[in-house]
Image (cartoon, rainbow, N blue to C red; front, side):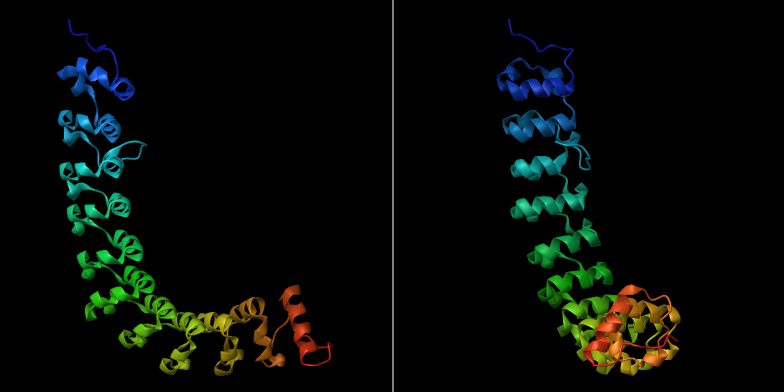
Length: 290
């Protein structure tokens, strides 16, 4: 007489038994196989794919937050089951994980289901998938990150794509990839955007109306490039910005009239740097606080 599986075994216990002793499946009846949950099927097929003909594929979860579960876990180990999967339901983060390990699975991917962050993460490391992207769905925040790390993908961008970049996007992109300047609408850049951009790519100063720089725009610019202080009306900057600059960029004192500096409360670091500058220029150490 055929020996039966203990009917009191839980789904997890049954899966453990089969994984440990695959030959016990000869004792499994219909009800035993039906006892297995989607999670247990994933765990079982990941190691014993020969039992796939018993699997009710609709039970396998797509979103999974446990170890050893979900389609992602199974296909990483057994990509031959890709045709059994409903890729329309596959989470974007799972698609990225699977493509890293099995690029051949690209033919199954429902590309239109990927979000902006999915595309950004994917294309930054695997630009060959750019041909599948609907670029018009990506906003400027994703576009600048993609183009800054993979500039060759800009071949897919049209005028509509470039228009999606705001001033900060352009400052970040051109700081790393200045060759895209021809597509930039310079009027989008705020004072702070200009400060960020010129700190990395000073050749673009020809596009800037210096009067348009606001208080913190000057702060950001001079933090990185203190030599531009000559374009600035120092005494019109707020006290907050002036104190900020003198703390983070002591070299600013090489370009600023000392008589315009309020030294009170600036701290020992600025004081020390000031003395070093005086020594450098052969000037007396005595000075008068304003």
